[in-house]
Image 1: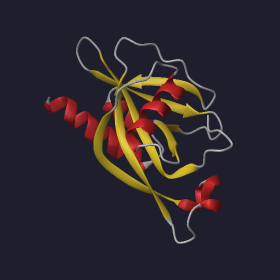
Image 2: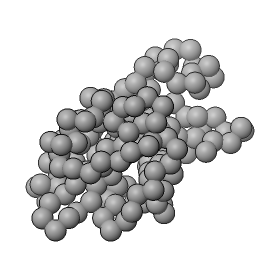
Image 3: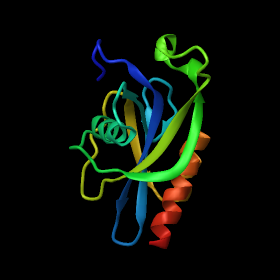
Image 4: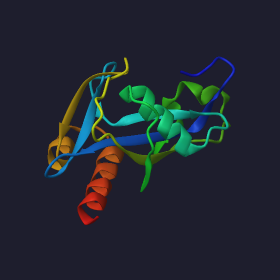
Amino acid sequence: MMSQNIKRAPFQVLVVPFRKTAEEYEFAALKRSDMSVWQFVAGGGDEGEPVEQAACREASEELGLPVLAVIKLQSMATVPAKFFRARSYWPQDLYVVPEYAFAADCTGQDIRLSGEHNEVVWGDVDQIMALLNWDSNRTALWELGERLRRS
């Protein structure tokens, strides 16, 4: 949770939770409790916080797990700055906020959702792809699925 003294940095992180099963990989979609949409872990960084550290922190907070290592993906997106409460103290000429994608290996761990989400579904790429609301989430999932398939 962000302290009153720390401002939100103008970037967003997206983290795709995945796990290895006996035969394949599964991915976790999370249902937001405030919007009833399916997505991956998403959140912002604190001012001065490195992007990768923000991704680790957000994944840990939203999945209820100890600090997770993350894998940086190539997928990136932008989100209109107007959708963030912190917009009021960002530069006035900032119109879009970059969203950096990561993956977190949750194999062997039990997810305990934060209050941001009220449901989790595990499935293969196609099953999770059908649930996701945002294009950036679908792109990151596709990339991770391809990376895992090829490795």
